[in-house]
Image 1 (cartoon, protein in one colour):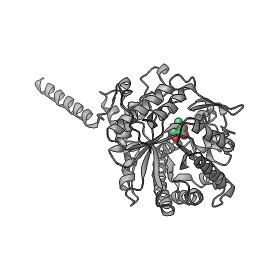
Image 2: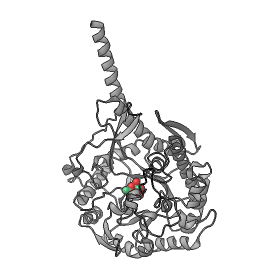
Image 3: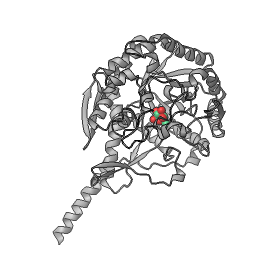
Image 4: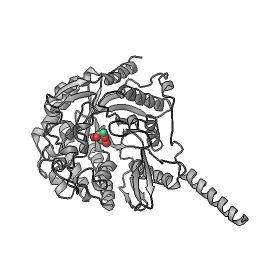
Length: 466
Ligand code: FCB
């Protein structure tokens, strides 16, 4: 009996020790958000205040990329890939209305604009480049500069030309060279006027959604392919980084990564704690380590692993951080080893994306980046899908206040971009979710400033007139 008790006690100690070992001490971090509002604002004069968009989501007329094909595909159950079979069509017609949209930015005192160039418009067929598409983006850049707005350009934001997808996309080892050849054309055309470049938006989301969760094209479920694609996207970042720096040495070039801090649904479930640990490592820290050391080491037990050394250390000038929420995953060993997302809050408290509003997660994400680098961090996306506009103002204020606290605590945060300037085509969710500072009436293309968005303009004014 005594021996049994000792064995049980030892096992309990090992169990508790393992939890402490794998547990992220920042889990559940909370601030007194009201209290944060009393902090004085520490954003310097050089701080970039912007909004973000991506080409496919706002431009319209994207008929030559993998998402265009996806719009008419159905899943295994015969359901359309995009909610209710919606199509991006003219989207927010930003291609034609960019001048008007730049005035909308000015009205909110924004001093930068993050947008992406659409690869399928610039390189409609392999090796064939469109001068008129490049000229279009040249005009956008000129218009921004004429209005005192710094262009912040993303080369790859989820969409690929059809020809690229058909030859195997990022599954192929030569994909990075094709991406950097495209980068070369864009930077030769826009480089003299554009200092800020982002290579790739959210490589982990592209790889996981496209090759595991089947939310994005090519909607494959193949963990090995997902890992290959993840690795090749990071290789693509490095080849673009080198190419851009070769063409313009003083360019600021970064990768855009999202950090969803992963938390265990329950602190006492060791499997969940270990899973959260591996997810944070594999999807966040592994990218930061790759940027620093050139070595990408990914491993998710039961799913797969890879190791790759690019030989390029510190191949980045800044980190672009996209932050929206935290996620909780449960590991179910008796359910085929599945990972299931768990939401502990009632739907009434979630955003229209079904996401928890958790401003402290931004602090944790910034701390994660800062644990690996002291280079500048730009918060390149943060925003809320809130059709009724009930929570946008508080969301904006709280997240900016949290960024302010991170600066006060020594983190090198240099910019904040709200996602998104306009309502837009939210990938597989179509037009239903509305992130815009400006609401878009898609029947008339009329833009209307949301009440809650005024808070953003006010915060910028307060931060700049101290
Ligand atoms: C990010 C994407 C962006 C947008 C927001 C809501 O993952 O980069 O295009 O869809 O989420």
